[in-house]
Image (cartoon, rainbow, N blue to C red; front, side, top):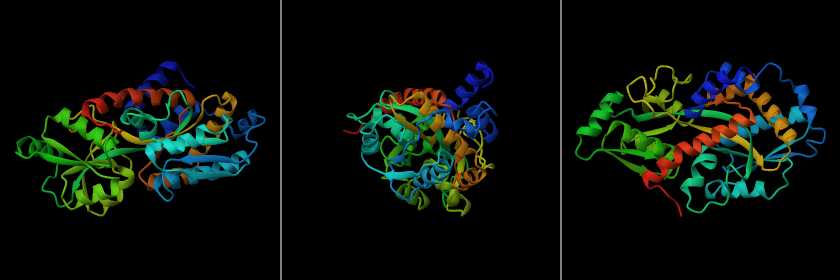
Length: 343
């Protein structure tokens, strides 16, 4: 997979925000060129039955559509049906429990996101699983950077104007999030600490109601993924001020990064990945990794993701394991300092 030094530098960049160009991503994950579909037969007894992807999300959402699209390609490669089982609720604990109750044979896969792997184990004071000890990472799947948006009717047109207003206003500004302890909440807290502005958090139950209040100017701004904001930005309902990423988004190339505008260290994205129960044979993990990565290489998959504000983001099992560790270490102190916590 190339030199270890180059791989580590690439991973260090990715650990802060998974936003590399497609070619670099695929080279990093595949090593490569040497990976072929023929290698999928290395685990002789796997798969011996249908594979179930267990999601902690409701049917019909972006994550569900993503999993079903990937599952179709994996089924073709491995010669067994791939079933998507939606088990939302309890911050991912219901879905995770369903996976952990099954045999550690790779036929049941946990497909979850940033919150379930890296935030909720710290956010929830009582959490039923440990993403590091209870699961074996297979690969990350997709990523979507967060974008700072205001209402298209807002008088604020630039990031500098937003920061200046937050410092000069007696009441300060308000920022919405997808919920207490969500990635939007944590990034908003980080943005506040970096800029020194007066900002108050308003938690919602998901992106949809939060974005609605941002669009109507009831709340001043919000950090939300491009996957849910791109269409609203293009239809002139929202105004994008900055991307919370090391690089500009391919979907919104005219929107500068926060770092470009002088606010460094405030970068994050939502991501999704796949993991199996700890104790699953390494050969099975590798077989799943190869099948999933091969699916992520498919042009139709990449086009579908890009149309929804996401990018394919494959990794090796070891890279994904390190990435989860780095994300937990990154967000845990901010969760604790912000006072966020769920009983």
